[in-house]
Length: 78
Image (cartoon, rainbow, N blue to C red):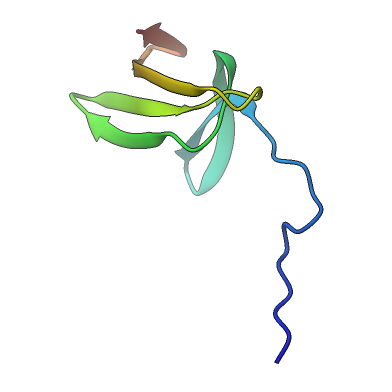
């Protein structure tokens, strides 16, 4: 049996966009200061925490980012 990977040969995307599921549809609601990948996100105190991750240059990020939606804007706190 041969395994085929959907990502083989493709570049990794490091996205700055922040999306929220609103009425069964993903909507762009903001942007991070820079694109990240491989971080952990979880709900916390009415917002979301993003823990660590990796930058496009491959450097690890140890930051904790707190996202909170106020009215229609996203507040980003490091």
